Length: 262
View 1 (tube, one colour):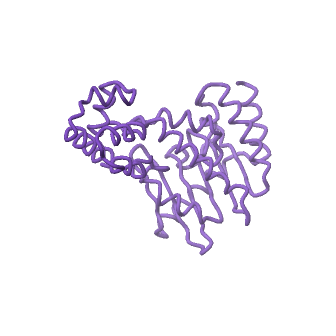
View 2 (view 1 turned 90 degrees about the horizontal axis):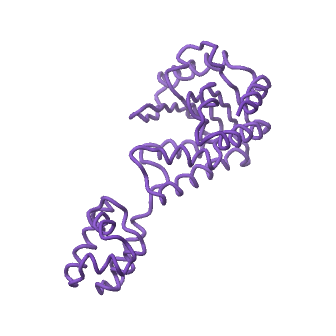
């Protein structure tokens, strides 16, 4: 809505000032269709276009003032509530089926994942979200230390996200993070069965006030649970999955072998 409103204001100011779309595009260094897309709200109006339009249309800063309202969201709306809980958590238990958990991702791995997002996101939003994800990882080494337990299904280690070079760096990074005393990384091999292990990822969180939450994601589902019965069920599922996973020491060797195959 912010894109559409700003684009409409841009068009109104341009029309009122008698500036054609062709003239604005040429002065700003954009293609005609690019300016058209921005005016129609299909693309985010850039700072460059707003500055040029503000000058050409005599808006006296009124168009440039929209810049702050057009900044990309650091996280999609459906995950912001989870992020708030994660920031307060003193313990995080994570199970992932197909991807390396966000708190363990390298910059290039995260970028490769987000770049393939559908619907596509623009470059500014991509960079902002990658930066936000990396900033979250500061929690791994922050004091007082929180407890982290990660169980990763083997498929996540075999999926060639971003290509072999990206995956090599990613697996090496997991080995490095696994040396932290407050972090446990376990692998669930594909030949082991655990109840609900193919039902998708799940996260469990405990805050300093000892409130407990469960978070699950699906194709179009992102839900943060706080009710005791649901969180209890998710906790039991995680426990059963973790029981079937390799130990931290065995998992380290498993990841090293996976790394050697790349």
